[in-house]
Image 1 (cartoon, rainbow, N blue to C red):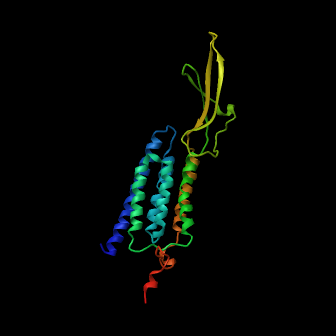
Image 2: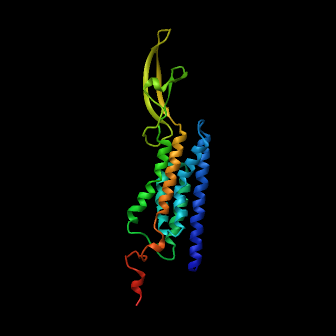
Length: 244
């Protein structure tokens, strides 16, 4: 295969795998929000965009930023840790991008600070997910021995609705207490009180969307090829050194 054919194949590989990630990101966001009663369209859009950030890096790399493609691989690994349900998709996409990197006609030019810039940029993809699911808008329930469940006022338990810093989770346990109650028959029963939260507020989804947009903007700040120096081989030498 000639150089032009390899370039076309690599671009097709990058685009195809990126669109695969975008498709499954949309599917995952729709399925996730449909399973939640109080979910919104805004939440679905924010979730899909957050999951598709590695694909966004890959597509931006095609705009004269080939050294950015490795960021997509790192970002895929970060996203895969939080969404194991789509692990096969991340493995396929990451493998396709590694294939495109290894089959370039020549090494991609990259900035000197790429060794630290890549992992830092890749790590930012976790921020929109934290903004979506790292919240605490508590609901409290009281479960009796007979299975009866009552809704309690979180404010009466000292819990105020609103955002608080938590690790990403779809269900956040905020408090648990057990109380003994004596029934009319003289037997002691045990009531379990628990408070948790899995609701994404509209402003949380907007904040996540904003963060995703800023991350994509950061990707566009990655230097384009013509602003960088000569490509370097793995041994650190320049191709021009072989010329007489």
